[in-house]
Image (cartoon, rainbow, N blue to C red; front, side, top):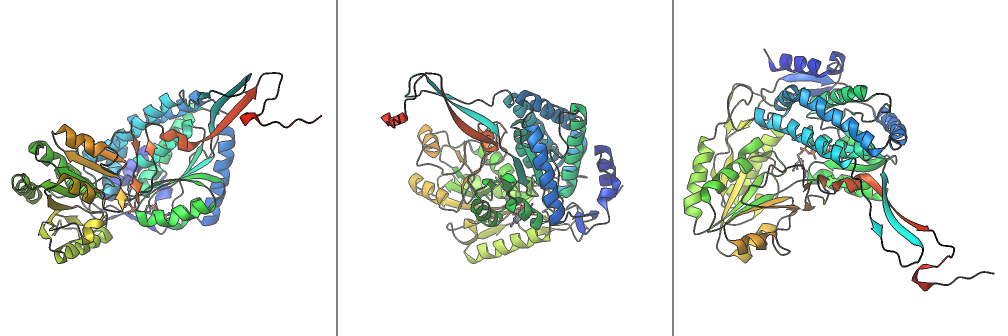
Length: 504
Ligand code: NAD
Protein backbone atom coordinates (compact mmCIF):
# COMPACT_ATOMS: atom_id res chain seq x y z
CA UNK A 1 0.00 0.00 0.00
CA UNK A 2 1.29 3.49 -0.82
CA UNK A 3 1.69 6.03 1.94
CA UNK A 4 -0.95 8.20 0.26
CA UNK A 5 -3.46 5.34 0.39
CA UNK A 6 -2.62 4.56 4.01
CA UNK A 7 -3.01 8.24 4.88
CA UNK A 8 -6.45 8.37 3.27
CA UNK A 9 -7.49 5.31 5.29
CA UNK A 10 -6.12 6.72 8.55
CA UNK A 11 -7.88 10.04 8.00
CA UNK A 12 -11.15 8.26 7.23
CA UNK A 13 -10.82 6.24 10.45
CA UNK A 14 -10.11 9.39 12.40
CA UNK A 15 -13.23 11.02 10.97
CA UNK A 16 -11.87 13.48 8.39
CA UNK A 17 -14.20 13.80 5.39
CA UNK A 18 -12.69 12.64 2.11
CA UNK A 19 -13.85 15.81 0.35
CA UNK A 20 -11.61 17.89 2.63
CA UNK A 21 -8.49 16.31 1.14
CA UNK A 22 -8.60 17.38 -2.48
CA UNK A 23 -9.48 20.21 -4.83
CA UNK A 24 -7.23 22.84 -3.28
CA UNK A 25 -3.78 24.28 -3.86
CA UNK A 26 -2.09 23.48 -0.54
CA UNK A 27 -0.12 20.41 -1.54
CA UNK A 28 0.80 18.17 1.40
CA UNK A 29 3.70 15.75 1.01
CA UNK A 30 5.14 13.07 3.23
CA UNK A 31 8.82 13.67 3.86
CA UNK A 32 9.20 9.88 4.09
CA UNK A 33 8.92 9.42 0.31
CA UNK A 34 8.17 12.91 -0.95
CA UNK A 35 4.86 11.71 -2.37
CA UNK A 36 1.77 13.88 -2.42
CA UNK A 37 -0.81 13.05 0.24
CA UNK A 38 -3.47 15.68 -0.36
CA UNK A 39 -4.22 19.07 -1.91
CA UNK A 40 -6.19 21.07 0.64
CA UNK A 41 -8.37 24.09 0.12
CA UNK A 42 -7.12 27.12 2.02
CA UNK A 43 -9.42 29.42 3.93
CA UNK A 44 -9.63 33.02 2.69
CA UNK A 45 -8.73 35.90 5.00
CA UNK A 46 -12.38 36.98 5.00
CA UNK A 47 -13.60 33.52 6.02
CA UNK A 48 -10.86 33.31 8.66
CA UNK A 49 -12.27 36.56 10.10
CA UNK A 50 -15.74 35.02 10.17
CA UNK A 51 -14.37 31.92 11.92
CA UNK A 52 -12.83 34.17 14.57
CA UNK A 53 -16.18 35.97 15.02
CA UNK A 54 -17.87 32.60 15.51
CA UNK A 55 -15.20 31.47 17.98
CA UNK A 56 -15.74 34.71 19.87
CA UNK A 57 -19.46 33.92 20.17
CA UNK A 58 -18.48 30.44 21.39
CA UNK A 59 -16.22 32.02 24.01
CA UNK A 60 -19.08 34.15 25.33
CA UNK A 61 -21.11 31.00 26.05
CA UNK A 62 -18.21 28.76 27.15
CA UNK A 63 -16.94 31.20 29.79
CA UNK A 64 -20.25 30.71 31.68
CA UNK A 65 -19.85 26.92 31.90
CA UNK A 66 -18.28 26.06 35.31
CA UNK A 67 -14.57 25.19 35.23
CA UNK A 68 -14.89 21.55 36.37
CA UNK A 69 -17.56 21.00 33.71
CA UNK A 70 -15.22 22.44 31.09
CA UNK A 71 -12.70 19.96 32.42
CA UNK A 72 -15.12 17.18 31.57
CA UNK A 73 -14.87 18.10 27.87
CA UNK A 74 -11.09 17.90 28.08
CA UNK A 75 -11.38 14.56 29.88
CA UNK A 76 -13.43 13.28 26.94
CA UNK A 77 -10.85 14.69 24.52
CA UNK A 78 -8.20 12.70 26.42
CA UNK A 79 -10.34 9.57 26.10
CA UNK A 80 -10.77 10.06 22.37
CA UNK A 81 -7.03 10.57 22.01
CA UNK A 82 -6.37 7.36 23.93
CA UNK A 83 -8.78 5.52 21.65
CA UNK A 84 -7.12 6.91 18.50
CA UNK A 85 -3.52 7.02 19.64
CA UNK A 86 -2.30 4.42 17.16
CA UNK A 87 -3.88 6.11 14.11
CA UNK A 88 -2.93 9.66 15.05
CA UNK A 89 0.62 8.62 16.01
CA UNK A 90 1.03 6.90 12.67
CA UNK A 91 -0.26 9.97 10.86
CA UNK A 92 2.28 12.14 12.70
CA UNK A 93 5.01 9.75 11.55
CA UNK A 94 3.79 9.95 7.97
CA UNK A 95 3.35 13.71 7.87
CA UNK A 96 6.53 14.71 9.74
CA UNK A 97 8.74 11.65 9.23
CA UNK A 98 9.12 10.81 12.92
CA UNK A 99 10.05 7.30 13.97
CA UNK A 100 6.98 5.38 15.26
CA UNK A 101 7.80 5.67 18.98
CA UNK A 102 8.13 9.44 18.59
CA UNK A 103 4.88 9.74 16.64
CA UNK A 104 3.11 7.82 19.39
CA UNK A 105 5.02 9.75 22.05
CA UNK A 106 3.67 12.98 20.67
CA UNK A 107 0.10 11.73 21.06
CA UNK A 108 0.93 10.51 24.57
CA UNK A 109 1.99 14.06 25.36
CA UNK A 110 -1.47 15.24 24.25
CA UNK A 111 -3.10 12.71 26.56
CA UNK A 112 -0.85 13.79 29.43
CA UNK A 113 -1.74 17.48 29.05
CA UNK A 114 -5.44 16.58 28.94
CA UNK A 115 -5.06 14.74 32.26
CA UNK A 116 -3.19 17.72 33.69
CA UNK A 117 -5.87 20.15 32.48
CA UNK A 118 -8.72 18.08 33.91
CA UNK A 119 -7.16 18.37 37.38
CA UNK A 120 -6.47 22.04 36.75
CA UNK A 121 -10.14 22.68 35.97
CA UNK A 122 -10.79 22.40 39.73
CA UNK A 123 -7.68 24.35 40.70
CA UNK A 124 -7.93 27.73 38.96
CA UNK A 125 -7.12 29.31 42.31
CA UNK A 126 -6.79 32.95 43.23
CA UNK A 127 -5.26 34.38 46.41
CA UNK A 128 -6.81 36.22 49.29
CA UNK A 129 -4.57 39.12 50.21
CA UNK A 130 -4.16 41.00 53.49
CA UNK A 131 -5.73 44.44 53.21
CA UNK A 132 -4.71 47.56 55.12
CA UNK A 133 -8.32 48.65 55.58
CA UNK A 134 -10.55 47.34 58.39
CA UNK A 135 -13.73 45.56 57.37
CA UNK A 136 -12.41 44.84 53.89
CA UNK A 137 -11.49 41.76 51.97
CA UNK A 138 -9.10 41.68 49.01
CA UNK A 139 -8.78 38.76 46.62
CA UNK A 140 -7.74 37.73 43.17
CA UNK A 141 -10.11 36.02 40.78
CA UNK A 142 -9.27 34.44 37.44
CA UNK A 143 -11.67 34.75 34.55
CA UNK A 144 -11.72 33.37 31.02
CA UNK A 145 -9.71 35.55 28.65
CA UNK A 146 -11.24 35.28 25.16
CA UNK A 147 -10.33 33.70 21.86
CA UNK A 148 -6.89 32.08 21.95
CA UNK A 149 -5.11 31.91 18.58
CA UNK A 150 -2.63 29.07 18.13
CA UNK A 151 -0.01 29.18 15.37
CA UNK A 152 2.09 26.03 15.28
CA UNK A 153 5.27 24.71 13.69
CA UNK A 154 5.64 21.55 11.60
CA UNK A 155 7.85 19.60 13.96
CA UNK A 156 5.35 19.08 16.78
CA UNK A 157 2.24 19.22 14.64
CA UNK A 158 -0.29 18.10 17.26
CA UNK A 159 1.27 18.32 20.75
CA UNK A 160 1.63 22.10 20.64
CA UNK A 161 -2.06 22.54 19.85
CA UNK A 162 -2.99 20.32 22.78
CA UNK A 163 -0.68 22.15 25.21
CA UNK A 164 -2.59 25.31 24.37
CA UNK A 165 -6.06 23.94 23.74
CA UNK A 166 -6.35 21.73 26.83
CA UNK A 167 -5.41 24.64 29.11
CA UNK A 168 -7.39 27.27 27.19
CA UNK A 169 -10.54 25.14 27.19
CA UNK A 170 -10.55 24.52 30.94
CA UNK A 171 -9.78 28.22 31.42
CA UNK A 172 -13.01 29.05 29.54
CA UNK A 173 -11.51 30.23 26.25
CA UNK A 174 -12.20 29.21 22.68
CA UNK A 175 -9.25 28.24 20.49
CA UNK A 176 -8.60 29.01 16.82
CA UNK A 177 -5.73 27.02 15.34
CA UNK A 178 -3.59 27.81 12.29
CA UNK A 179 -1.37 24.74 11.94
CA UNK A 180 1.83 24.67 9.90
CA UNK A 181 1.17 24.61 6.18
CA UNK A 182 3.57 21.64 6.08
CA UNK A 183 1.44 19.52 8.45
CA UNK A 184 -2.26 20.34 8.08
CA UNK A 185 -3.51 16.74 7.91
CA UNK A 186 -2.76 15.92 11.53
CA UNK A 187 -4.56 19.17 12.42
CA UNK A 188 -7.68 18.06 10.55
CA UNK A 189 -7.46 14.76 12.41
CA UNK A 190 -7.33 16.61 15.76
CA UNK A 191 -10.33 18.70 14.75
CA UNK A 192 -12.27 15.51 14.02
CA UNK A 193 -11.18 13.90 17.30
CA UNK A 194 -12.23 17.03 19.19
CA UNK A 195 -15.61 16.98 17.43
CA UNK A 196 -16.20 13.48 18.83
CA UNK A 197 -15.46 14.68 22.34
CA UNK A 198 -17.86 17.63 21.86
CA UNK A 199 -20.58 15.29 20.61
CA UNK A 200 -20.24 13.10 23.69
CA UNK A 201 -20.17 16.17 25.95
CA UNK A 202 -23.57 17.34 24.74
CA UNK A 203 -25.27 20.66 24.26
CA UNK A 204 -23.33 22.66 26.85
CA UNK A 205 -20.43 23.00 24.42
CA UNK A 206 -21.13 25.83 21.97
CA UNK A 207 -20.45 25.38 18.27
CA UNK A 208 -17.14 26.73 16.91
CA UNK A 209 -15.24 26.23 20.16
CA UNK A 210 -12.00 25.05 18.52
CA UNK A 211 -11.90 25.55 14.74
CA UNK A 212 -8.90 24.82 12.51
CA UNK A 213 -7.96 27.31 9.78
CA UNK A 214 -6.02 25.77 6.92
CA UNK A 215 -3.66 28.23 5.30
CA UNK A 216 -0.18 29.69 5.06
CA UNK A 217 1.37 32.49 7.05
CA UNK A 218 -1.19 35.04 5.79
CA UNK A 219 -3.86 33.28 7.82
CA UNK A 220 -1.53 33.39 10.82
CA UNK A 221 -1.37 37.14 10.26
CA UNK A 222 -5.17 37.34 10.35
CA UNK A 223 -5.09 35.77 13.82
CA UNK A 224 -2.30 38.10 14.90
CA UNK A 225 -4.11 41.26 13.79
CA UNK A 226 -7.70 40.44 14.76
CA UNK A 227 -8.76 42.40 17.89
CA UNK A 228 -11.10 39.59 18.94
CA UNK A 229 -8.11 37.28 19.48
CA UNK A 230 -7.01 38.06 23.02
CA UNK A 231 -3.92 35.87 23.08
CA UNK A 232 -1.78 34.42 20.31
CA UNK A 233 0.40 31.48 21.17
CA UNK A 234 2.88 31.27 18.30
CA UNK A 235 5.39 28.46 17.92
CA UNK A 236 8.03 28.60 15.21
CA UNK A 237 11.24 30.25 14.17
CA UNK A 238 12.68 33.37 15.77
CA UNK A 239 12.19 35.01 12.38
CA UNK A 240 8.44 34.41 12.69
CA UNK A 241 8.46 35.72 16.28
CA UNK A 242 10.17 38.92 15.19
CA UNK A 243 7.23 39.57 12.86
CA UNK A 244 4.44 38.40 15.15
CA UNK A 245 5.67 39.91 18.45
CA UNK A 246 5.61 43.60 17.44
CA UNK A 247 2.25 43.23 15.68
CA UNK A 248 0.70 41.79 18.82
CA UNK A 249 2.34 44.45 20.96
CA UNK A 250 0.92 47.13 18.69
CA UNK A 251 -2.61 46.16 19.63
CA UNK A 252 -1.67 45.23 23.24
CA UNK A 253 -2.65 41.60 22.74
CA UNK A 254 -1.10 38.89 24.83
CA UNK A 255 1.64 36.78 23.29
CA UNK A 256 3.06 33.40 24.15
CA UNK A 257 6.09 33.16 21.86
CA UNK A 258 7.78 29.77 21.60
CA UNK A 259 10.63 30.30 19.16
CA UNK A 260 13.93 28.82 18.08
CA UNK A 261 16.56 27.24 20.30
CA UNK A 262 20.33 26.85 20.07
CA UNK A 263 20.69 24.42 22.93
CA UNK A 264 23.97 23.39 24.51
CA UNK A 265 25.34 20.70 26.77
CA UNK A 266 28.46 20.72 28.91
CA UNK A 267 30.36 17.51 29.66
CA UNK A 268 32.46 17.97 32.81
CA UNK A 269 35.48 15.93 33.97
CA UNK A 270 33.40 13.86 36.43
CA UNK A 271 30.59 13.05 33.97
CA UNK A 272 29.31 9.51 33.54
CA UNK A 273 30.43 9.27 29.92
CA UNK A 274 28.24 6.29 29.02
CA UNK A 275 25.19 8.16 30.17
CA UNK A 276 26.31 11.37 28.48
CA UNK A 277 26.92 9.54 25.20
CA UNK A 278 23.38 8.16 25.07
CA UNK A 279 21.80 11.46 26.09
CA UNK A 280 23.84 13.40 23.52
CA UNK A 281 23.02 10.93 20.75
CA UNK A 282 19.27 11.16 21.37
CA UNK A 283 19.33 14.91 21.97
CA UNK A 284 21.33 15.73 18.84
CA UNK A 285 20.23 13.09 16.30
CA UNK A 286 16.69 12.23 17.49
CA UNK A 287 13.83 13.56 15.32
CA UNK A 288 16.61 14.19 12.73
CA UNK A 289 17.65 17.27 14.69
CA UNK A 290 14.23 18.87 14.17
CA UNK A 291 13.21 19.57 17.74
CA UNK A 292 13.29 23.06 19.18
CA UNK A 293 15.17 21.46 22.09
CA UNK A 294 17.64 19.53 19.90
CA UNK A 295 21.20 19.59 21.23
CA UNK A 296 23.18 21.76 18.84
CA UNK A 297 26.31 22.78 20.77
CA UNK A 298 28.44 20.54 22.97
CA UNK A 299 31.28 21.70 25.22
CA UNK A 300 33.52 18.87 26.39
CA UNK A 301 36.19 19.28 29.05
CA UNK A 302 39.68 18.72 27.66
CA UNK A 303 40.34 15.92 30.19
CA UNK A 304 37.55 13.72 28.75
CA UNK A 305 37.44 14.98 25.15
CA UNK A 306 39.52 12.15 23.71
CA UNK A 307 37.46 9.55 25.55
CA UNK A 308 34.07 10.87 24.54
CA UNK A 309 34.34 12.43 21.08
CA UNK A 310 35.70 9.39 19.18
CA UNK A 311 32.83 7.32 20.64
CA UNK A 312 30.37 9.97 19.60
CA UNK A 313 31.78 10.06 16.07
CA UNK A 314 31.37 6.32 15.87
CA UNK A 315 27.72 6.67 16.86
CA UNK A 316 27.29 9.28 14.14
CA UNK A 317 28.84 7.01 11.55
CA UNK A 318 26.76 3.99 12.51
CA UNK A 319 23.33 5.36 13.45
CA UNK A 320 20.65 3.97 11.16
CA UNK A 321 19.16 6.52 8.77
CA UNK A 322 16.15 5.63 6.67
CA UNK A 323 12.44 5.25 6.15
CA UNK A 324 10.99 5.37 9.67
CA UNK A 325 7.81 3.56 8.65
CA UNK A 326 9.39 0.48 7.12
CA UNK A 327 12.66 0.05 8.96
CA UNK A 328 13.87 0.31 12.52
CA UNK A 329 15.90 3.41 11.64
CA UNK A 330 16.53 5.88 14.44
CA UNK A 331 16.89 8.89 12.12
CA UNK A 332 14.12 9.69 9.65
CA UNK A 333 14.00 12.34 6.92
CA UNK A 334 14.28 16.10 7.01
CA UNK A 335 10.98 17.82 6.39
CA UNK A 336 11.88 19.13 2.91
CA UNK A 337 14.51 20.36 0.48
CA UNK A 338 14.71 23.74 2.17
CA UNK A 339 15.80 22.04 5.39
CA UNK A 340 18.40 20.01 3.48
CA UNK A 341 19.76 23.11 1.73
CA UNK A 342 19.92 24.97 5.06
CA UNK A 343 21.93 22.13 6.56
CA UNK A 344 24.41 22.02 3.67
CA UNK A 345 24.88 25.80 3.82
CA UNK A 346 25.60 25.69 7.56
CA UNK A 347 28.10 22.84 7.10
CA UNK A 348 29.90 24.76 4.36
CA UNK A 349 30.18 27.80 6.62
CA UNK A 350 31.34 25.64 9.51
CA UNK A 351 34.11 24.28 7.28
CA UNK A 352 35.13 27.84 6.43
CA UNK A 353 35.42 28.55 10.17
CA UNK A 354 37.79 25.63 10.60
CA UNK A 355 35.24 22.93 11.52
CA UNK A 356 36.14 19.25 11.00
CA UNK A 357 33.01 17.55 9.72
CA UNK A 358 31.93 13.94 10.25
CA UNK A 359 28.75 12.98 8.32
CA UNK A 360 26.24 15.42 6.85
CA UNK A 361 25.85 13.87 3.39
CA UNK A 362 22.56 12.96 1.77
CA UNK A 363 21.50 9.34 2.15
CA UNK A 364 19.76 8.17 -1.02
CA UNK A 365 16.68 6.02 -0.54
CA UNK A 366 15.24 5.87 -4.03
CA UNK A 367 12.87 8.81 -3.60
CA UNK A 368 14.14 11.96 -5.26
CA UNK A 369 11.87 14.25 -3.20
CA UNK A 370 12.73 12.72 0.18
CA UNK A 371 15.69 14.19 2.05
CA UNK A 372 17.53 11.80 4.32
CA UNK A 373 20.90 12.85 5.74
CA UNK A 374 23.54 11.32 7.90
CA UNK A 375 23.67 13.50 11.05
CA UNK A 376 26.75 15.70 11.19
CA UNK A 377 29.21 16.13 14.04
CA UNK A 378 31.45 19.15 13.58
CA UNK A 379 34.51 19.70 15.76
CA UNK A 380 34.94 23.45 15.95
CA UNK A 381 38.06 25.34 17.06
CA UNK A 382 35.78 27.95 18.61
CA UNK A 383 32.18 29.09 18.87
CA UNK A 384 31.74 31.19 15.73
CA UNK A 385 29.79 31.50 12.47
CA UNK A 386 26.90 29.05 12.12
CA UNK A 387 27.40 27.76 15.68
CA UNK A 388 25.76 30.96 16.92
CA UNK A 389 22.51 30.33 15.01
CA UNK A 390 19.89 27.58 14.98
CA UNK A 391 20.01 25.43 11.85
CA UNK A 392 16.97 23.17 11.98
CA UNK A 393 18.78 19.95 11.05
CA UNK A 394 20.99 17.35 12.77
CA UNK A 395 24.28 19.23 13.20
CA UNK A 396 26.15 18.99 16.49
CA UNK A 397 29.02 21.44 16.99
CA UNK A 398 31.56 20.09 19.46
CA UNK A 399 34.05 22.32 21.25
CA UNK A 400 36.76 21.71 23.84
CA UNK A 401 36.88 23.71 27.09
CA UNK A 402 39.21 23.95 30.06
CA UNK A 403 37.70 26.49 32.46
CA UNK A 404 34.22 26.24 34.00
CA UNK A 405 33.56 30.01 34.22
CA UNK A 406 34.56 30.46 30.60
CA UNK A 407 32.36 27.63 29.43
CA UNK A 408 29.36 29.10 31.24
CA UNK A 409 29.96 32.39 29.40
CA UNK A 410 30.24 30.59 26.07
CA UNK A 411 27.13 28.57 26.86
CA UNK A 412 25.10 31.76 27.30
CA UNK A 413 26.70 33.69 24.43
CA UNK A 414 24.04 32.95 21.80
CA UNK A 415 20.75 34.65 20.97
CA UNK A 416 18.42 31.80 21.89
CA UNK A 417 17.72 30.64 25.45
CA UNK A 418 15.57 27.53 25.32
CA UNK A 419 17.17 24.38 26.75
CA UNK A 420 20.48 23.36 28.29
CA UNK A 421 22.12 20.52 30.16
CA UNK A 422 25.20 19.64 32.12
CA UNK A 423 26.75 16.22 32.66
CA UNK A 424 28.61 16.12 35.96
CA UNK A 425 28.80 14.32 39.28
CA UNK A 426 30.26 17.38 40.94
CA UNK A 427 27.66 19.10 43.12
CA UNK A 428 29.31 22.50 42.86
CA UNK A 429 29.25 22.44 39.06
CA UNK A 430 25.69 21.20 38.83
CA UNK A 431 24.33 23.71 41.36
CA UNK A 432 26.26 26.53 39.73
CA UNK A 433 24.78 25.60 36.35
CA UNK A 434 21.27 25.86 37.83
CA UNK A 435 21.99 29.07 39.74
CA UNK A 436 21.47 32.77 38.96
CA UNK A 437 24.80 33.00 37.12
CA UNK A 438 24.51 29.60 35.47
CA UNK A 439 22.51 28.62 32.38
CA UNK A 440 20.31 31.49 31.15
CA UNK A 441 17.78 29.15 29.52
CA UNK A 442 14.15 28.41 30.32
CA UNK A 443 15.10 24.75 30.72
CA UNK A 444 18.27 23.66 32.55
CA UNK A 445 18.90 19.96 33.16
CA UNK A 446 21.48 17.88 35.00
CA UNK A 447 22.55 14.49 33.66
CA UNK A 448 19.80 14.33 31.08
CA UNK A 449 19.75 15.79 27.59
CA UNK A 450 18.23 19.04 26.37
CA UNK A 451 15.18 17.47 24.71
CA UNK A 452 12.26 15.32 25.80
CA UNK A 453 10.52 17.57 28.33
CA UNK A 454 7.51 16.39 30.36
CA UNK A 455 4.25 18.34 30.35
CA UNK A 456 4.26 18.96 34.12
CA UNK A 457 6.82 21.75 33.91
CA UNK A 458 6.35 25.10 32.19
CA UNK A 459 7.90 24.85 28.72
CA UNK A 460 9.65 27.70 26.93
CA UNK A 461 12.75 29.84 26.85
CA UNK A 462 14.28 33.25 27.22
CA UNK A 463 15.88 35.85 24.93
CA UNK A 464 15.30 35.09 21.24
CA UNK A 465 13.25 32.03 22.19
CA UNK A 466 10.52 34.54 23.01
CA UNK A 467 9.91 34.25 26.76
CA UNK A 468 6.61 32.33 26.50
CA UNK A 469 5.64 29.41 28.73
CA UNK A 470 3.21 26.66 27.86
CA UNK A 471 2.04 23.41 29.34
CA UNK A 472 2.49 22.70 33.08
CA UNK A 473 3.23 24.59 36.29
CA UNK A 474 1.30 27.90 36.31
CA UNK A 475 1.41 28.45 32.52
CA UNK A 476 -2.43 28.45 32.65
CA UNK A 477 -2.37 31.99 34.00
CA UNK A 478 -1.57 33.34 30.52
CA UNK A 479 -4.94 32.01 29.35
CA UNK A 480 -6.98 33.87 31.97
CA UNK A 481 -7.75 37.42 32.98
CA UNK A 482 -6.79 38.28 36.55
CA UNK A 483 -9.02 40.64 38.54
CA UNK A 484 -8.15 42.07 41.94
CA UNK A 485 -11.32 42.55 43.95
CA UNK A 486 -11.71 44.58 47.14
CA UNK A 487 -14.94 44.18 49.09
CA UNK A 488 -15.92 46.60 51.86
CA UNK A 489 -18.17 44.92 54.42
CA UNK A 490 -17.81 47.73 57.01
CA UNK A 491 -20.02 50.78 57.46
CA UNK A 492 -17.18 53.25 56.81
CA UNK A 493 -15.21 54.15 53.71
CA UNK A 494 -11.53 54.31 54.70
CA UNK A 495 -9.29 55.20 51.75
CA UNK A 496 -6.01 53.42 51.11
CA UNK A 497 -2.73 55.09 52.07
CA UNK A 498 -4.63 57.24 54.63
CA UNK A 499 -5.95 59.59 51.95
CA UNK A 500 -8.84 61.74 53.14
CA UNK A 501 -11.46 63.11 50.77
CA UNK A 502 -14.41 64.19 52.89
CA UNK A 503 -17.35 65.82 51.19
CA UNK A 504 -20.30 67.19 53.20
P1 NAD B 1 8.13 28.73 10.89
O1 NAD B 1 8.51 29.93 11.67
O2 NAD B 1 8.51 28.66 9.47
O3 NAD B 1 6.52 28.57 10.92
C1 NAD B 1 5.81 28.37 12.10
C2 NAD B 1 4.37 28.81 11.93
O4 NAD B 1 4.31 30.23 11.85
C3 NAD B 1 3.68 28.29 10.67
O5 NAD B 1 2.36 27.91 11.00
C4 NAD B 1 3.70 29.50 9.75
O6 NAD B 1 2.67 29.50 8.80
C5 NAD B 1 3.53 30.64 10.73
N1 NAD B 1 4.05 31.94 10.33
C6 NAD B 1 5.23 32.21 9.71
N2 NAD B 1 5.39 33.54 9.57
C7 NAD B 1 4.30 34.12 10.11
C8 NAD B 1 3.86 35.47 10.26
N3 NAD B 1 4.60 36.49 9.81
N4 NAD B 1 2.69 35.72 10.88
C9 NAD B 1 1.93 34.70 11.34
N5 NAD B 1 2.27 33.39 11.21
C10 NAD B 1 3.44 33.11 10.60
O7 NAD B 1 8.68 27.46 11.70
P2 NAD B 1 8.77 25.93 11.26
O8 NAD B 1 9.81 25.75 10.22
O9 NAD B 1 7.41 25.38 11.04
O10 NAD B 1 9.29 25.27 12.65
C11 NAD B 1 10.63 25.22 13.04
C12 NAD B 1 10.95 26.33 14.02
O11 NAD B 1 10.05 26.30 15.12
C13 NAD B 1 12.34 26.16 14.64
O12 NAD B 1 12.95 27.42 14.74
C14 NAD B 1 12.05 25.59 16.02
O13 NAD B 1 13.06 25.82 16.97
C15 NAD B 1 10.78 26.30 16.36
N6 NAD B 1 10.01 25.61 17.39
C16 NAD B 1 9.97 26.15 18.64
C17 NAD B 1 9.29 25.49 19.65
C18 NAD B 1 9.26 26.06 21.05
O14 NAD B 1 8.42 25.61 21.82
N7 NAD B 1 10.11 27.00 21.42
C19 NAD B 1 8.63 24.29 19.38
C20 NAD B 1 8.68 23.78 18.08
C21 NAD B 1 9.38 24.44 17.10
